[in-house]
Length: 153
Image (cartoon, rainbow, N blue to C red; front, side, top):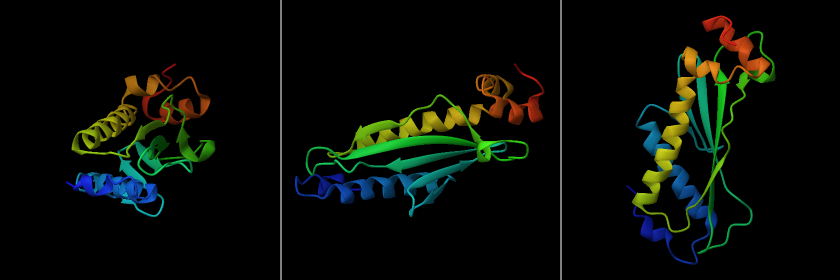
């Protein structure tokens, strides 16, 4: 794990804190089979029928020593996009999660991992009939899941 205390100075630039957190998350999930794209700060989990992407963003209003925002943005995409609108994105009810990482430590890192794991597990559940049924109120989603499970409305 990272020695987070090196980032706890009130003078540490927020971009450095955010970058260190993203790099550590990328390394953590790469070891577990995900793909991390450093250039756009995205962790990608590919399953049989869906792909879950966790975007990592920050804020322009961060304040050194007081607030460094880590925004966790979940997106779920269909692997097979034929017949779908919106480039295969599946409409879910998941919203971004914002966490202040200015004084991050191992405990908070574990909490962030827990949030991401929960989002990924939910995305993985969309590969089952029961999970897919929870998303079929949207016509775009229904087109996709009907391929695998028939009409589940």
